[in-house]
Length: 265
Image 1 (cartoon, rainbow, N blue to C red):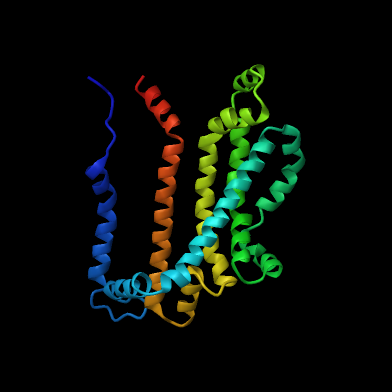
Image 2: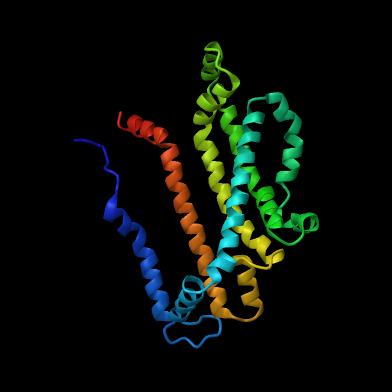
């Protein structure tokens, strides 16, 4: 009797993932159908505002696009910078030891504590939002890349040297593929931090964006609009994570196949 388990795909996978969100959506709709509560307006009213203002209206252009742009640039810079620095420090024990105290100092600083400094340097605007994302989201990628490169098998390192591979060939053909799973684990954490930080930075130093919209709605007691902004932030995080997982599976498919082969003997 075979012990292999077939992966769940297609409609069965969709049903497993969708039943709970659909159930919660239905419960929310029914529970607030005739609500007169100031803080819990009917879900129908929230969805109507979402469609009218953000899908058919101009809010997606004035508030959603700037947030997406700042998020993409901030996450991209933090991922690129973290990977480059991580590879350099991971390949040199001396360099890693030299900067270890500085890394420990800066990574222990909570990103919101840096807002006054970043705001003073860059002022209100996209530069401030992007800088705060980079300063906060850099560390998971950097530290994971260092660990990933340092954990590459010593025999593999010696073999790459014996074949007289250039430094770039060792990085691109040995270090990065072997450290890939850990680097992507760092990307995943940086991604979530980037979403949080774009909201935090826009609540403090912005005149548009999703974070600014949610804060302004809350201060003006526009509860329905506050719910709309909150739902959009949740959807943004879900869709970005979904896209990232697909990219991760495509880039690391060699490792997924290797793990499946090892499990099946």
